[in-house]
Amino acid sequence: MTALRSIRTYTLAAVLCAAALLAGCALRQAGPKPEAASEPRAVRPLGAILEERDRALQSLRGLARISYRAAGKRRAFNAAVLVRRPHRLRLEAFSLVGAALILTVDDDEVTGFLPSEARFYRARTSRQNLFRATELLLELEEMVSLMMGLPPVRSGAAWSADGSVLRRTRAGGGTDVLTFDAQIQAPVRWQRFGPSGKPWYVATFEDFADTSAGPFPLKITLETPPLRRSYEIRYDEPELNVTLPESHFVQELPEGVVRIPLPAPTG
Image (cartoon, rainbow, N blue to C red; front, side, top):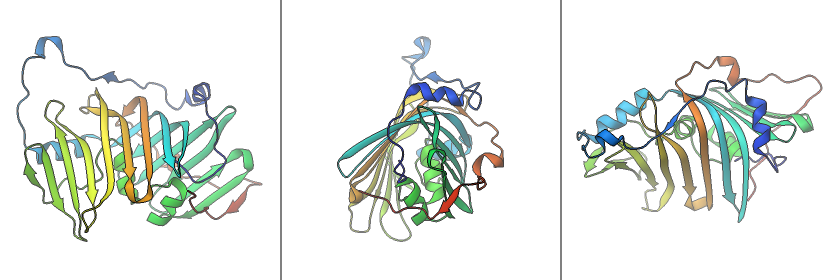
């Protein structure tokens, strides 16, 4: 999910490099409890569910399998992911010998480090530079929310409800549409339509696990029809609402490393 081309083949064995960083992760796969399987859940307003999840999910630390498709090509890699809402993100993609890419993002800077090539990319945080680094054309807050298992929308916006669906008209035109699962009581699909009515983004949330912060999707997919790209994140027992220091989301230029501009996305 990055335009930095050196990432090629990744194996699960390399994930062991992050054991110290990710120690203590624990999550249980969601499933109906036998004694309560036949009991229907109380019906709550969808807006209230959205606001509750927005408050409940604030940070994440875990391992993930990330794959994407662009220009007819499919690529995948294993990574350690750190997320702290609303504006902090760190992704370490693994190779056979350790980290192949370290990407950090905060309010000010997008930074990418390729240790094997001694290359260091740094640019101010903007939608365009995030796209250069990740090939995701989203604002930083939206990207962080999506990786946190949340639809990238504002929970307090003026939504209209229709059955299991929430809709809202965006200020610049277009529409956000959220579809909820009544049993899980969480959004399972997000769609953003442009002013012309054509879809810009389609995200799905699946494989929910029970956590102390409520149901969390272990599988997140995103499609961007105008760009003909798709992305998938599969988390492996992420740890939620952990304390993540600011130092995790910044990088200093290592000695002897070349600093160059972020490359443009390909495909």
